[in-house]
Image: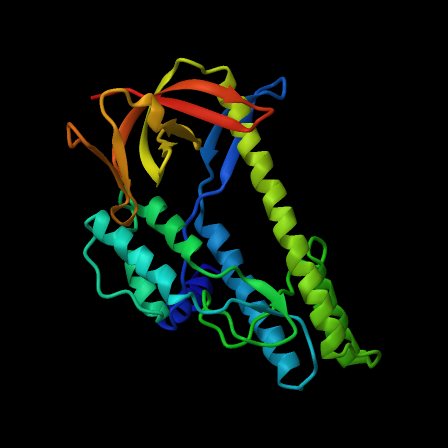
Length: 305
């Protein structure tokens, strides 16, 4: 299984597959059910084996059905917009990451992900590039899957937890046994609805994770942590902590040593008097000052160095 997974992975990389290595939060509970810690879940080689086999199964079923010219629900991922890639390239310049010119070619983007692998900027670059991509969705009309570098793809391997997979199972069984066949119009109506429900479910999951993080930090007011600046806005910057998988906001109003101007294109804040700069990717030290579970807000205060 391991040898086969490596062969499949190599084949995917050669066609430009984008492997976003973004860790999932792993919530560690104590014996009473309280949150003891929030860690970055480890991605094992066994996980990669399952991923490769699932992708291969999905692709095989997609090709089998589409080659028979039978309507189905595809999983599509369209090419990114050029404007988003230009902004991503500005980030690479701001982080001083050497790179070839960023293009819509997935091999170009893949080379950047490889370059930052196992560096301090890996998580940041992976996350920003993922946000630069269009969102994958379901459609009755095949437009390929940019992220996987595939011309034809669908979701087939999780019919218990995903309804689009169940529809593909029904279509496949009807091909084998005979029976009702969906038309493109009703499949597209389903695809639009299922894409909407998927986004709602993802938003709910993300909000729950955020609230768990705030709940965890509620008992840690006043504690000091190391972190990295993960996002900069006109009103402050977000800090991703090193020891726990938590992100919070430092308000500009809390930086009393100067008035800081936001330079969006350079991903930084700069002091008008001191010329002190806070850049995306900078390491900082913070203190936890507010954790409001009801409002889902987590605020930090910067500790000057």
